[in-house]
Amino acid sequence: MPSPDDVKLPLPSSLQQIVGALLFGADHPLTIEDIRTCLNHVAEQATEGNKETLQLFAEASPREVTDALKGIEQELERIGLGVEVVEMNGGYRFQTQACCGRWVRDLLKVERPNRLSRPALETLAIIAYRQHVAKSEIESIRGVVIDHILKALMELHLVRIVGRSDLPGRPFLYGTTATFLEHFGLKSLEELNELDPTLQRSKASERKAMHKKEKKKETPEAAQQPELPVEPDAAAVKEILGSNDAPVEPLYES
Image 1: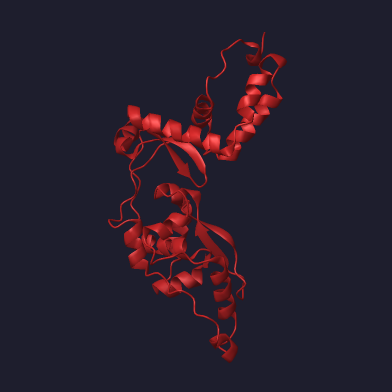
Image 2: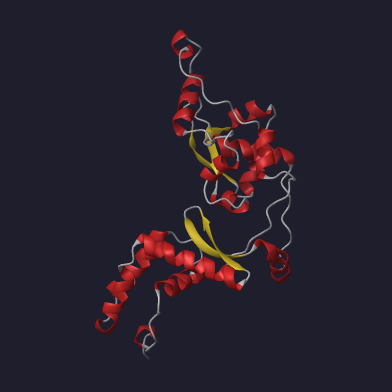
């Protein structure tokens, strides 16, 4: 029985055609390098008859792959198919458009997700803008114990443990996940800064300086250190992430 590679099929007519097939067949967002690696791997395994043509695809630059993705995006928008290409955490994928979510949910028999409470959104906002952050720091800002809220956010895969602090006891540090980006329709955490420039995310160097400052008592040397940016008000950040406490319309992968 001949293998699938022995079956004579016409080769793709364009790089865009290949990229579209890869996005459709993938079970996770693909980066530009994921796509280029696949193109190179196929060319390396090609027979002599197809090798020259497949090598042309393998030599595609990152810019050419990006252009192919943009071409797919524009074509889908033109024909209004209800599917779009989105960038998510550095990768690309197909997903249904948010405006079609209610019909897709009904077809798949998926219930509407539970809404995040105001305390949960405020806690999530603090983690998003201050990550990587210890539980004690979040409680200091909010003024309440957050054990049950933090547990719920982790069960929803919106928050995860990303490391340990240098503070006594080495408490866990928390940050957001790829699911958080997907839930709020963000390409990356940098987009949080674009939502409101007055609420810039904490930089890693600033977080490290804060941890060191908390480890020791106030001294003349410490008093001379430059102050860190004012912490974002949890309620204000919450207004940016979701003013009505409602989740983003669910999106479904192809």
